[in-house]
Amino acid sequence: MKWPMFFGNLLLVANLNAQAAEGTELLDKVISYPGSYSQVCDVFTSPTDIPYRAFEISGHREATFSRVKSAAIKENRESLVRAVRARLLAIDLAKPARSLPVDPSPDENENHEISSGADPMTLNPFLLDLIRETHAIEALQELLIIEGKLVKGIASAKDDAKAAPPVVDGWLVAEENEPSTSPVGSDDIGENPPESEKDPTPEEIARLDRKNHLFQARVAQRDVVMTIALLLREKSYAPYLKTTFEAAYAKGLKAQLKDEGVDDFKPGDPLTPDMEKMQMQIDKITGLPFLKFRSVTIPYSRESRDEIRAAAAQWISEHP
Image (tube, rainbow, N blue to C red; front, side, top):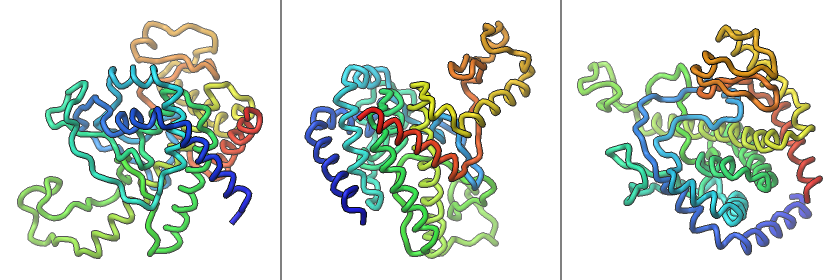
């Protein structure tokens, strides 16, 4: 164990906990019950290698922050960010997520079967959404810590079949080209399955469940890295902008423009009416248009992850 780092983290936790009490109640509320719910029928899928989805959080969820919750988040930004930083350090990646009851009083009801958010004591997409919505660059150090724990836990689970994957909550991403793992009789395979179908054994269910949890943990790790990258990008931070990841993003944007038949666009040009109809926006860094509802996927690599982490560490050292 690296004792100076260990005691440094303990001191950081103590200081943040002392400052975070004011925002903790609101943090728990907006993550447990974001307030706006809708029915999502499509299942989001990802290749086995789980590429980055540039600056986005993966997967579809039926809950989002309502206008009421978003207003409360904006109004209480400072106390919430302190609470978020403390929470990131307090998350136990070995502790199972709690199931939440449905929202008893949703702010916006678009779904007849009202759902909820995520266990606020876990690493979950709503926590990352909150960091993005508050532009919480102050949380870089805590994001680096939780991402490091995720990577360590994922590696342990991959190397040791008896080691449990890190616990994350709220990521609903299916692995592409995976056969259905639904038990016989479930809605996915109909009420009258073929006689040749057999219910999976408890051992098979356990193996599939473990595999799924490991996959979700890997998705979460990519999204934490993307959250770090986005925070640095919002600041136009030069060490980040020099990364190979940012270069790959610019290349991906150009490929998208070519696919859409607008590759003659020059940075500095205004959007044409047709491009506005396509819901394109101008990226402030590259000056290129991007599609609001289509992400740029970039292959994951340990090198790109390390570059982004190094840029974040440099930012932290320059902004004590």
